[in-house]
Length: 130
Image 1 (tube, rainbow, N blue to C red):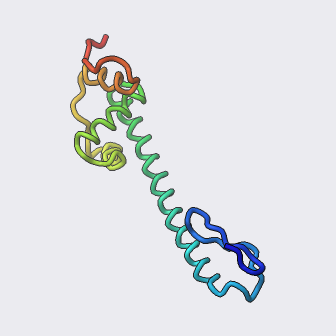
Image 2: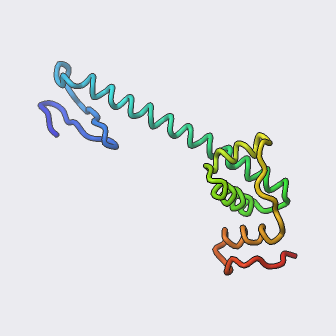
Image 3: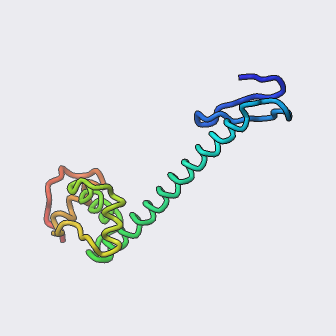
């Protein structure tokens, strides 16, 4: 959209103003407010995602140390447990990190299945783990 003396573009679906001379663009305050609100929402979402990711990484470390397993296996266990309990992975991760939850009982066979699924190998049939 072109205006006399300036251009209005859309950034991520939210209007943004560029080069409006003073006195033009009567809708500029509302457009600027919309853009600010959009950026604040996006910022909050990104911060929440970062915190969730940090907690998931911490939970992977806790599980790896607790059970003597690889980080990839710990993540597969975390993901599988979250799915089987029908909860978000970051919620389960927080419970594990704070010591208020423990994933299902582990056996060598269940660890093997978790590893095989992560690697995309095998037929999913548990085998003896040395």
